[in-house]
Image (cartoon, rainbow, N blue to C red; front, side, top):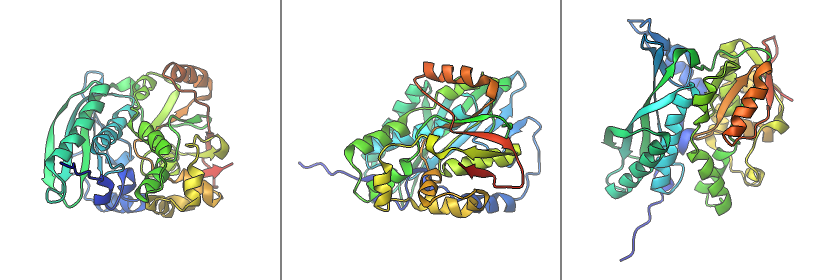
Amino acid sequence: METTIYKLTQYSHGAGCGCKISPALLDKILHTATPAAFADPRLLVGNDKRDDAAVLDLGNGTALIATTDFFMPIVDDAYDFGRIAAANAISDVYAMGGQPVLAIAILGWPISKLPPETAGQVLEGARAICAEAGITLAGGHSIDCPEPVFGLAVNGVVPVAHLKENATAAAGCHLYLTKALGVGVLSTAQKRGSLQPEDAAIALKSMTTLNKSGALLGRLDAVTAMTDVTGFGLLGHLAEMCAGSGVSAVVEFEKVPVIPGISTYLDQGCVPGGTHRNWSSYGDTIGPLTERQQQILADPQTSGGLLVAVAANGTGAFEQLMREQGYDLKPFGRLQPQGSGPLITIA
């Protein structure tokens, strides 16, 4: 009997973190929301800071990190979709310098279109990544949904002294990125049927690699700020870091890590819709750049790398720690005092 193969990307209008609401629309949503009637003094990081997760001081020197992330399929394979979505959600805890401790699943499934066994494969993929992170996928919630949606709500812990935020960077810091850009371009090529198998393997490896090093970076005082690069692209998340920290950035484009070969797909027009939405949201804060630079630097990433600001006197210790974790990193930019010019300048 022939087995039916379900290609999940054919059942959704978006893909991965490219589904995110644009930064401009998100600002409108947050600014029109009614302020909370109760301001919890234990809340170290909340909605007002536009950070990766909420953080609550437990009063014993430790803080609780709480986050959630979910999206539509970015790959066809159900098991791999679960792995990617789980790695992406857990990343928010690592981006705060924390250690994940527990996850629960969020599942929306078109039960009239896709069999429950396929949803089970999504969950199995998520369990595999959770096990790699040393945590349990302990439960969750599911609904009948027009398109497949999956993600996790994740809790983590961090010593308050090791908490990293995205708005605490300082002028003089060097900028690092732990994963190469280009996943959005490759996922668009996949939806169009033009992605080569070797490039699909590169994208999958990137998206399923956990940002575990974030928990170690929380211990480095030289790391002044940290976030992960997802749907807003490198420029969007760097702009949030700069605006929140009161600094500006200079990006040396040729030093930005980029997945080899994506120019071929860009030449074919494989530019995600999220790239255009991103640029419409924050392009007026960026200095002059070429169309190709825009296509790469605003490319929406799914389960992207960590964007790290490191004080100049600590770059040696940072690079050594990352080498021990299997990363050979060099800075791609620097932070400087915020003047009257663009928030980010491309050199």
